[in-house]
Image (cartoon, rainbow, N blue to C red; front, top):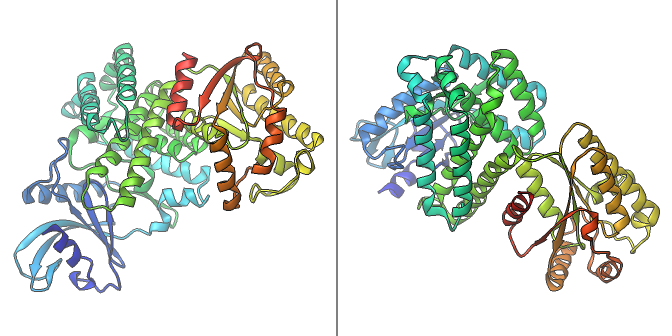
Length: 519
């Protein structure tokens, strides 16, 4: 029945206005049909506990709620609720046949102006992010509050939402969130809530619990002709919409972090704090970022059980969910990480850069790659790879010295500001490692050597695959491996703290091992 309706709604004649085509987008709770100028959002008949759309009356009610609430930030976009009817040629949004369902009808916003797409194209600067933060700040300052709304800021209500999250993830231990990671986050949340109980109480008393949006992330923000549209708020559950304003804006900050733009997240937070004068928000923002990352991971995990999406989408949802949960874990670790200089150490093709990228993402710290720096010094683009002979050209002793000097400079720039940093290079010589150890000591920073290991057959397989790809940043090639192996000086305990990591484990497992060793 559902598939028949979906098939009918992919036909242009199912719509009251002329349209050349119809596109279907799915979320875990909705089917969204895009015509040339409009979007029709039909709610799926699902029950996730916190959301129940299983009856037509519920779907009609929440369609009306969606229009009412979203008109706060998009008054000219949400046109109303329309009836889905049965016709002789199938389901349609016109005619006089029996009502099958209801949908929200809204003007179609340009997909290429969504914030996530603009960010991917490099078309978002601090100026646009400050504008978005300004709209959110103004919205929060004017948002409704009342004693009944304020009750949702009580710590027991907040912890109920957390407990629901943890329980709903118990079925995904083998796919997106291992049990030990879930329990680690649970223990941290419980500890933080206990330590900050007084602050949560003050937020209620000071009026920061308001009727917010509840779903402010990049895919729900559109920039058109200098105007900010924030759409698709939470309409289906008051306890997700009635929340601390810090929790609401934390969603945007987390999503910017997720998209590797901590710099823009910092800009958004600075603007928001300036406009709202919310002096206590910084003490809570990590707690709420973890919550938002966890919820996004949960939502993506739910898609694994959606029979209406195909396998590539399921696979993509699984990977995305894992990344959100790793970001949540990373936020916990950031709070206890002292200024640290990490260096990788290992043969070409062993997986150093993959690990460095994962650790950089989770901890929100910069990672500098030797191949990128080497080519930048030479005035070359990062890709494609260059077929240099071993120890010559870009890899001559002089070029190596210049590259490591530049990496040392970059590391120092980060440590000077009190930030941790990752230097992603082979560090095959003890002399180079000792230079960086001395730098860490000068800034009273931790010095960690991430010694990355991989079996010889696997390294050789990777190097062959890399050479056929042609677009790798790394210039490592199979014919150079034997010489590098001969010259490689394994790190010694006297050089610093060594954490040995095998790339037979996933990047997520490797970073968890790093955190455990950092203790």
